[in-house]
Image (cartoon, rainbow, N blue to C red; front, side, top):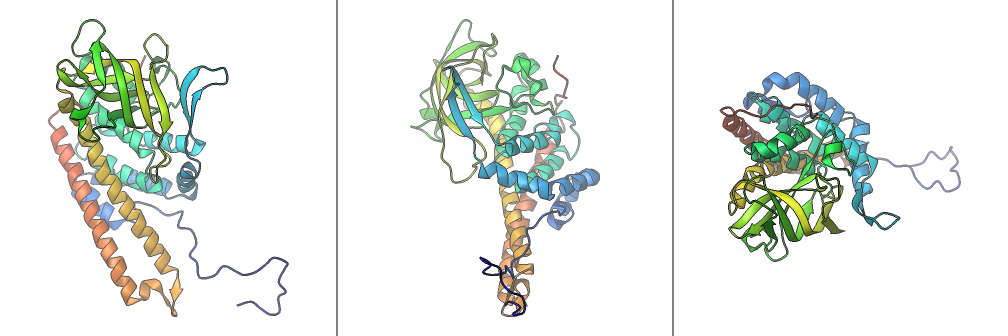
Length: 388
């Protein structure tokens, strides 16, 4: 209702009322009782101070804005530069790079490997849980980088070169040979058109360039239908040798500084996961190194996939939590039939159901995080060392 004593200006049709303000500038950790209880219960209570600081940053208006901008301006693919050179370059909005740098700063790429201790994976899960609520898409390549460590550390000839770059807290988005970079990211290229999750239907072929065996160079020819994080510095790829399905590390650039023929055909047009670039890729004789034994590729890559699956649990719980947070905020600030929605009995039932499901998902995710810590307690984890 307008004040009849105040004249309306031209074009002024109404005032916005009964709409809640944007939820921002809150602490994503201290406002989440279920998260705080899970962290303490599963063994990372010692990190309370760190998580409070992290939660404050991730609930800030400027941080939340990065998530919206990264999705409003999706990645764009440029196959060639203006002179006709093949570059396979995906361009991202600066907000995407800012989120990547923030995730790396908080150790989501490698903190449990760099600083192994009781509760290390629980701590990382808590940070990732809050970061996923800011923006989930960019967490995919961060997670694939984190998940590559337990696979690569078993192979010293590959670990010596790649792990210092993977576990480095520095985010370096430049499309350059990894030898010129301070930090590296990892992606995966597994799925093919004819098989989907049935990887034994894969048709991509690999043959040894010289001597065969773990850590040796192979040439890969084939097609991958769903490559997430397609601007990563290297990819874990399944391809067939004479001995069967095998696992390879394929970099974007060759060691001699020339571009590896890992060629992006197009970006996927997705309904979700928009800020992250996912592509179809052709391997036109791309050079890669065998990881593990020939014919044992699925067993090898599952060491990484297990940690990626864990992150799917954390990310799903985070999505549920953010949905609940937004629903509660809306209902606490919106009036219907002379009462706030949050005070209406039927709405209280709806919110209670959402909260129970969200808290159950959170409890499950952090119990799995503790299980990962229990597995790692008896292992010697690679610590971060600066690349030369």
